[in-house]
Amino acid sequence: MQQAKKGDKVKVHYHGKLTTGETFDSSEGRDPLPFEIGGGMVIKGFDDGVTGMTVGEKKTITIPADEAYGPVNPDMVIEMPKERLPQDMEVEVGMPLVMSDPQGQQFQVVVKEITDDKIVLDANHPLAGKDLVFDLELVEIEGGSPLIIMP
Image (cartoon, rainbow, N blue to C red):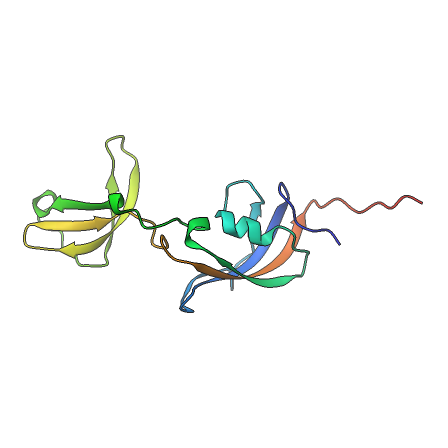
C-alpha cells in the first residue's frame, strides 16, 4: 500500500482537540482537508502526523505547542490607551478585534483586559502555547502513482 510522503497531495478528515478534550476544529460534516505534505499549508506536527499513513488508516496524534502554533509570545500582548478606540465602540474581555500594522497589514487580536485608561490586546494565535490532539483519517492520496511490479 502507498504511504503518504512529502510532496503528496492528500485529503484528510480530522478532529482537533485540546488536551482537555475541548474541540477547536473538525472536518465533520465537511469535505476532507486537502493539502500537500510539506507544502507549508498546515502546521508542522500535522504534516508529520499524516506522513507515512495509508489510505483508510486512522490514528490519533499529539502535537506539542512548539510544532503547532508555538509558545505564547509576551511581545504580542499590546497595551493601548483606551482613548484610541472609537468613542462609540463597546468592548469586552474575550472580544476579537482587527488591527492594522504601520504597513496596513491586518491581524486579529483578542481583548484580554480593560481598565479605566487602557485596553490590553493579545495578538498571539488563539492556540499558541497549547498542545493539540488530532484524530486523523487519511481519505485519499491524490494522483498517487500505481505500484508497478516487474517480473
